[in-house]
Image (cartoon, rainbow, N blue to C red; front, side, top):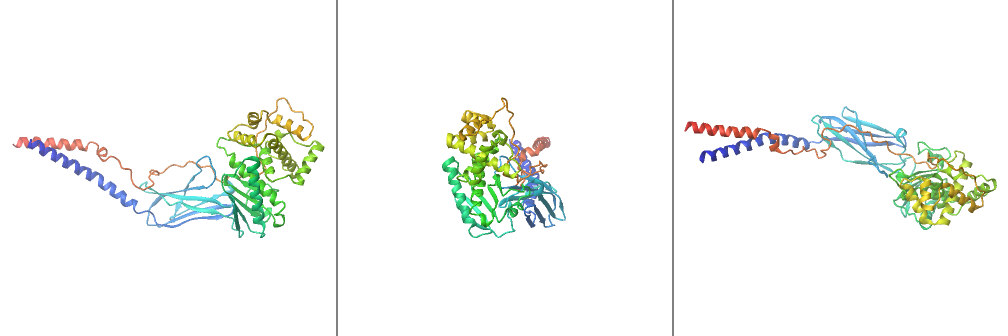
Length: 445
C-alpha cells in the first residue's frame, strides 16, 4: 500500500510539473505582448469636399507591424453590412489610403464616416484601433442652422431663407400626414445653397438643369435656392424634395421593391400644396392638345428636355391627385407597401385597386375629360431605369479580403485551449515512469 501511495503521489507531482512547464511560458509571453499595443502617433481622415477622403495612420517605429487593414463605413440606411475593408500598404511606419468618391459615388454634406485600423504583427496577433468618426461637411460656406419637427435646415445666404423654408417644410410634413397618412420616420437634413450652381458643385454627377438632390439613404436634401426666390419657388421645391425622403422612408425595401417614377414624382408635387399656375397650365394644354403621355411610359426616366419633363411632372400630379381623391389615403399607403414588398406596378395596382396601369389611365382620362387612348391588347411593361430626382450611391461595395490569422481575437489574448488536451501523450509517459519506478523499488527490496 505504501508503494502504491508513493506512486500516486509521484504521478501527481509529475503531471502538475508538466502542466506548469508546458502552459505558463505560452500564456505569459502572449499576455506581455497584449499589454504593449503600438503607440499611435497620428490617426486622421482628411476630407477634400466633395472629391475624396484621405485616411492616414502613423505608428511609433519601436513596434513591428507586418500588415495594416482599414475598415470604414458611413452612417446611412442599408439592408446589408456596408463595412468596407481595404488592405493598405505600410511603409516607413505610415499607412495612407485615398477614398476616391469620383469613382465610388457621392457623399452628401453631413454624412458621418466611421473608421478603424487592424494591425497585425509578425506573430499573427491582430490589434484594432479605436473607432474614429468624421463629418463630411462642405467647408466653403459659413452655415447657419435651424430645426423643427425632425427637420434640420442649414443655409448661409439671406437672413430669412432658413425660417421661410423651414416653415414650408413643416407644412409639407403635415400635408403628407393629414392627406396621405405618411409620417416622417427619421430626422432629415436640408442644405440650402445660395444658387443651383453652388449646389451642383457639391454633387459629383448631376443633370445640368437640376435644382435639387435627394439622398434618400442619408435622409439628406441639397437645394439651390437664391434668397430672392425663397418665398416663391423655394417654398414649392423644398417640400417637393422633402416628400421624396418621407415617402422613401415609408416605403423602404430590402427585397428590391421600387416605385414607378410617375407615382414618386406625383406624390412629391402633391406635397407642395395646391397646384401652381405652371402645373395648371400644363394640364390645360395637355387636354387641349391631347399631349399626355401613356402613364406606362412614365414608369421610367422623364425626358431630359425641361419643358417636356415639366408636362410629365404635372401629369403625374394629376394622376396621383385622382387616386387620392377617388380612393383615399389608405389605398395609397397599401400601394406603397405592396410595391416595397417587390411587386411590379401592374401587380400592385391590380391587388390594391383592381386594375392595372392601363386601367388606371382609362379611369383618369375619363375623370379629367381627356379623350380615351387606344391601348395595345398586350402591352410590354417598361422597366424603371432612372428617376429625375438624383439619388446617388455613397459607398463602394465591400470587396472580400483575406482575414488575418487571428482577426477574431479583438481583445489581443490567445484562445484558451484545454491544457490537458494540449499535453497529448505526456500523462501516459508520466504514468509509465511511475510504474517503472515502482518496479525498481520492488527489485531493490
